[in-house]
Length: 148
Image 1 (cartoon, rainbow, N blue to C red):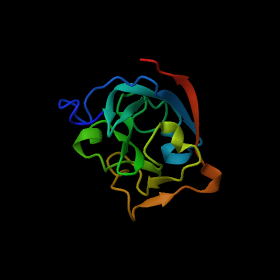
Image 2 (cartoon, one colour):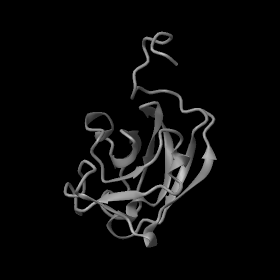
Image 3 (tube, rainbow, N blue to C red):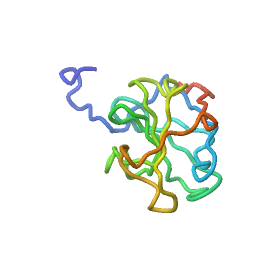
């Protein structure tokens, strides 16, 4: 879709996520074990790709609907719902991946913020993020296809 053909298209606006799949991410351990589990396609998009929702079952924020995964500036990011539009570079964890479906994350290098604890566990990817070790490689599996 070009801006000429749809002048009302706004990146980040609610858009159907037809054809994008829900995914399951596993392999997190320690403080960010809370990021294991299912990520569901939401009705929101960012930079032409869906925003995913995740409800953690362990750790900080367990049971609350705060966690999102979105694509911004060359990385899939995991963090707070308010950052998707308010501060999209900020995250708790991120992965280098080409722009495209979340399945591009398979085999990607993940990084997580060095801090732990509520409001001390996030930043803008740079020097304060550490690469995960081979032992903690994350797996991304397509769990279903959302046909909208």
